[in-house]
Amino acid sequence: MSRNHDTITEQDKDILFRKARTYNGWNDKDVPDEMLKEIFDLLKWGPTSANCLPMRVKYIKSAAAKERLKPYLMEANIEKTMSAPAVAILAYDMEFYEHLPRLFPHTDAKSWFVGDDKAIAETANRNGTLQAGYFILAARALGLDCGPMSGFDQDGVKKEFFPDENFVVNFLCNLGYGDESTIFDRSPRFDFDDVCEIV
Image 1 (spheres, helix red, strand yellow):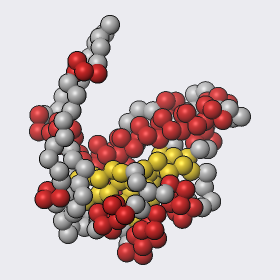
Image 2: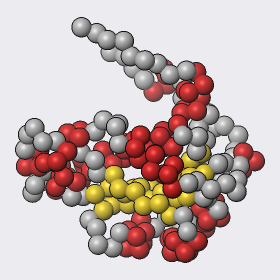
Image 3: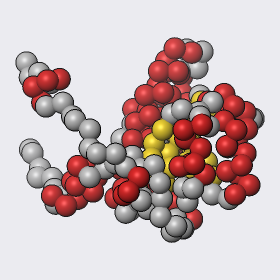
Image 4: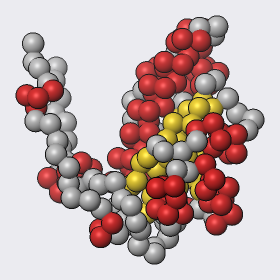
């Protein structure tokens, strides 16, 4: 038996997708800690395989923390990152499977991964990145603009901010209220027939 799904408005689709931009500058407006918590309280409901939740987030807000991050940024990314009200370091836990007895209790999912480095790496990367996508959508749903980026020393950031955890740093995401004067003209996108096929 099928069930109808609620749909979102065209305005909602604009917020989440059509008007989503990568911002290079920010208005001087704080992102409250409660909003950062709310991002997680939304994204955590996004589906993952076997309910594994490998993504880990460290928010960089203080001037001191930003100074610790600064040496690991590419030159082109320094100003926009230092001026962002918050910067999320999005990582994933390579020991995610240790939590599966709690998160996926109806079967012994942990045993699927113990000793299988290939399955661990693939699952952590795939689902950690999937959750990071949910992170961006949740932030945008709450009215924030995002500046996801690579262009930094992953190993350096890992050693600086996660020295004792078996985490892999995935990417950074600047957060705040974007200054529209700092974005480029909208770049082209593929059409459906360019990259999709129905068989």
